[in-house]
Length: 313
Ligand code: NAD
Ligand code: UDP
Image (tube, rainbow, N blue to C red; front, side, top):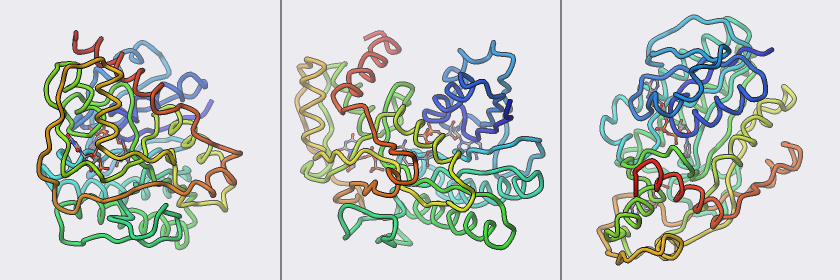
């Protein structure tokens, strides 16, 4: 039985990862400060004797004995990561230092949940891992983008300098049940608005694109990445290459929910990337033919069912 630490384990992705790791008969320690996550996300796991919950902030050191660490602690939605930008940078950078220090001390393998945001507003499309990105270092998204870029640098250098076993994945927009209904991300916003028959808020003219990955496909990719040979550190893109205009997504969600909502257009936030689509050649090759399986409509339907139930709509 492996002992595995998941930081940010009470968040959207973290809760699915904890659940999957427990199902695969691992012992799981979930660490979270509940900034954007909640106990509700992992309430169904609390009765499992192999599940442990720790309230802790990754900006502070902690000493635990584990075999593997998945480092997910960090707010992910622009609304939340811009709420306290300095704290966001501290979470990414000091969190990485603390978790890498722990991994070094206890000889654990550690995976970093990095992001497609390291590519910024990309002028290479689709984005391969070899692309260095186009990030505004002083813009409103920089606390997140540069924090995650610095974390990648820390991971690579702990590997080179201290031989810590590291894995870096760059996650593209992921959605599914247990997203926070008010976290401001596009899929949760549109679904909740549509279910309430309120206007769907498209920012800009809706021609910007994103590629949406269902959460179970991501979790599969994360676990496969952790299991790759030690020499393979990544970074590797984990995302669904299906690319959609935001306006198209709004129309799809109205149709799937049979909503009476109209679409309204609101100002585009500063530095909002115009296009995003992962090149997943490396993931397919290195992760044993990993390929996202859940088509957008199916994943959206699952997510709609979840919000209907959890919000009583
Ligand atoms: P989330 O906000 O639901 O989860 C983040 C979790 O980290 C929350 O439970 C939060 O309470 C916790 N957390 C935040 N700051 C912390 C701190 N200082 N100490 C301890 N815990 C802290 O977001 P998510 O979508 O589940 O994202 C998880 C990870 O995946 C994040 O690192 C995010 O950057 C990365 N990611 C997500 C996406 C996506 O589309 N969802 C895309 C790219 C990268
Ligand atoms: N977006 C939108 N309406 C919303 C929320 C988001 O049009 O209510 C747009 C946003 O401007 C961006 C895209 O949807 O172009 C994805 O936004 P999200 O915050 O989900 O993720 P990110 O920008 O980090 O990819």
